[in-house]
Length: 161
Image 1 (tube, one colour):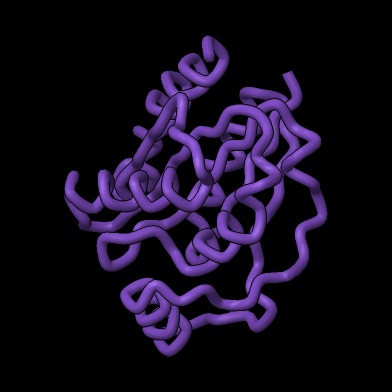
Image 2: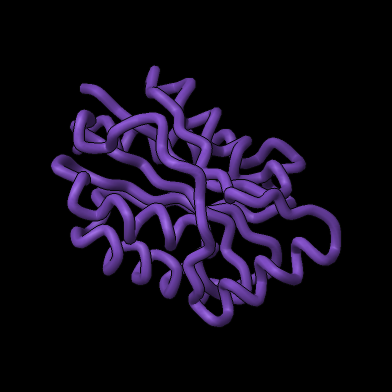
């Protein structure tokens, strides 16, 4: 099965999950990048504002075509209880290219289960299809290594689909 893992990460938490998932699946990986790099407190504030207002910031052109994959797995940080602006931009730009199955994952700080359901709902709406699997990990789980168990379970669910 040909799999693509596409993700956006500002702090490295979502990237850590993406690389673990891609490694276990032998998947290709696409880092969703903004055309203008954001960093520091001002960059975080700008990202949160984009998320809150559901704006779609400009992202760099993709290097891998999702339509060439049987499975596309998309990862986002959850900010202000929502998916990130760059992932919103990616999903909107590529929704017609998701010919196969999709799955979603996220990294979050302190948002609760409501934020998880909201983010996955937004992703499903933009992708135009329901995910066959979802996974979320808190920042503390990522820092401690506890996320590895979740990734393994997620990969099993994806492999069965």
